[in-house]
Length: 115
Length: 113
Picture 1 (cartoon, each protein chain N blue to C red):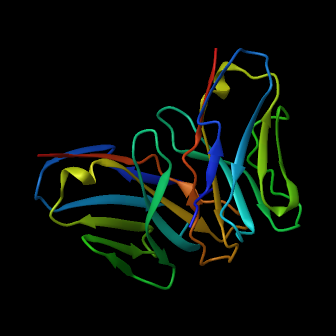
Picture 2 (tube, each protein chain N blue to C red):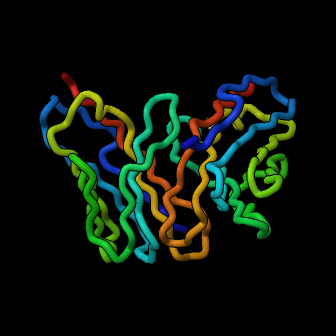
């Protein structure tokens, strides 16, 4: 079956512009995660959606970052007024949402470069 | 906050060798630990998931062990092949109430033909 897909695969933008990154999770998965992987660093958690519950935004680094999940499926991560330090690979993952037994399935990521 | 460490950061071995990758974590109150592989420019592929009640999991040439009390896990790769070259990441899901995985920075493995 189809895995997690993300678009675009690469995004180059100028400092100060807004960007939107998209994630299509595996069908039927109720949990969706966004992570960021900066050069030479581990994956950093950004935000978590579970069903209709309020999202866990505890990992968002600043108020320039926001995310939505429409209809419990597709998610969009928006970065406003991008900065050079936002350059990273943004990874989306989904899971069945079963605490403790979850396997998270990752998409290929979006490589964001802020000039 | 949970901290995950992987040693070594990079490893090169000749084809056919058996090898061990190490992962340690600071808070032993975890639900599970997961090993992933990441190829350049690609996302993460889940290799093995070990629940907190388990001590090991096996898949083909891979064997992952978990010693929760000491905060350690190892990934054993038998008879390594050039196709095993990738970055290997371990991640834990802990019981602090955080919904996310805590990742190590990975071990970059190169298997030399």
